[in-house]
Length: 110
Length: 115
Image (cartoon, rainbow over all chains, first blue to last red; front, side, top):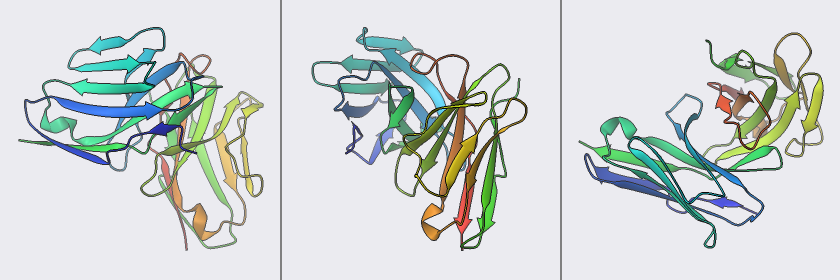
């Protein structure tokens, strides 16, 4: 039973354009959502988060949008840079643990 | 300010041996979490500990796996009598306060290979 779903395994965008990474969840008890970025052979690095009482949170080039009624969140990266190429995990918080999606591999082409 | 430390980074064991994975949380963090990542999968929660206490072990297999976070020293994830299916990356994370509204900071992981 996958409670956090990242249905697209990969995304390729041109440098300077927008990257949109999507995430869906099924458990309405989740109340805090996070995005992590992961390079090969490294641990995940926290990127940005959003509380369920908000619908948008922005930090520099990164913006996370939350649509509670659709149980959907998305991460926007504008403008995308080659250094953004990594695996991005969506995570949802509930009952003291994080539930992760399977990740999306983002490739930003120069 | 050192981040979350894990050692060893790579561990090779033969079937039936024991694996011990260590995690030192960030300074000032008293909450530790262990996650496992199988190939092509996301991270799966295993256990959440505070000093000397297991708070939630709902993601940990009932047999062969145990975790501790003693008053002094690192947190230890122990896998007894390893099998090939235990081969995975094991990540430790720590947070300052209660989970939910405090970001968890991850270590670099221990990659366990069972021959």
